[in-house]
Length: 608
Image (cartoon, rainbow, N blue to C red; front, side, top):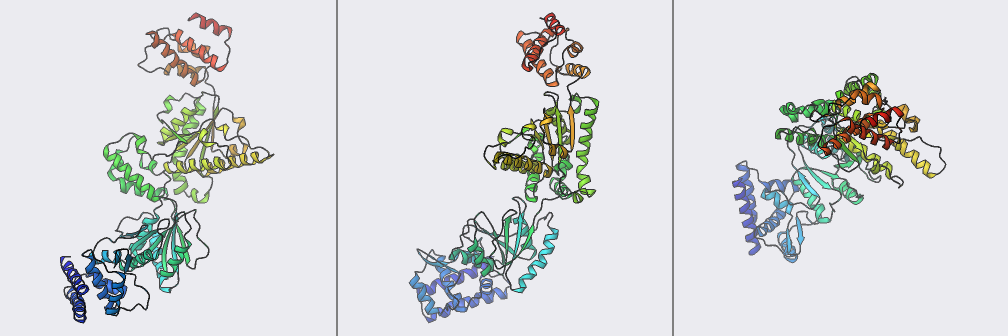
């Protein structure tokens, strides 16, 4: 490196000397300095950026002299005026048959070398225009790209045809399109020159910088298409590069007037086996630090594109190395206010249901756990590529444990539970409800969660006959919701008190339905016996059997009554006694608009 710097300094000194005292003799000295530096670099087998640039840009001997002059002046913060530059051109007989050279730029202070060429000659990172970046990829594991990389060999051979071709990588944000393009360039022994379509303006100077950088650094030119339509940029690209790359969103379409043949490849989300490989390689020994309820299998449920999934794994690894055990901190965050995280801290032992419903919920848990194996390893995912989403409908009277059952499912499956905020879902503006639905499911796909639609009858109502535009849009919203539930790769739980209001078509598509009846006397007694924490001081007169036999309450009402009674007792500074609970039960009946029987009134009066 020091030897190269010494050769560079000789050239700059010779160029600056000629600029100060011109003449045929000085021109010969400059030419000799260039020849000598080239020969010494060859004799010592040294990498000499000057010689490489001359070969890649096909400089003439006269051009080399003019470039040496500009380089020498620039090393001392000096420039040439346009008039001086033209005089030098004439003196050195630098021909312009092919137009103005791409290696110089014109500034207010004068003519100078392109910062791209200066960076190359000095062995520094080149200064590039806004929106243009040079990537020097290194060897890294390319998950899920083996087939694409192998195919790229054949694709790049098309460049020999001297016809315009374009390799377009499409996918959603975080799918690793840029990384894939870097791997493709690296495989072909190239660097990657990436232009951001939204901010690379492609002025004449920027175009020159782009071409100069591509030639000097042996770069594959690629454009990332943004929101703007950049027809002029693509037209210019096709004129300068016979083969180039494009990166676009899956939903973005290309213009139809281009001459280049476009080869499009979509980057899909990795399957479970691919994600399992990534998790094992990235997390390594940290897998043993996962908290209870989280396993490598549960990690593979995140429906994330490759790049986003790797980012999540690296963040997870950092948390595990830090010693984090709170599962909520180890889950991908959900953005926006339409989903509310509910604690998944309930177990089957806390759930008080009849044996049939209890067994049904356990069966659902086992089947959901086996779903990945059936779809991917047993081939059902390919045979039935649509409608593999899991939907569970809990229906029954208020307070019978539907929300709690959803928490139990989430805890057993090791998945986060998010409740959909219906107030943020439904909109009076046409099209907004569908947009909100789409955003909810898009976000849920990224974190592999259980979605809970509480009071689901509000949005899954029966579709009506179309009598006006409002009916048509309402039916369209319901149809779109059904479609997204079927497409969702996770689990949807819907809870309702009004099964009769549900759309018939949706009921046919439900994976599982579980009825939550009001608890019978036996279950009510179990609820009363288990409702109070161990720390709660209880009076000797407390009689769970009597409470269960006398009052037909739901599980939620029993919970409310127990809490209300405990608050009354604490306010009095005494134990929880039957009289406190009787007051609480009286409050529950009033809230529900229920009347007491004569025997119930007698019992209530007995504990006043």
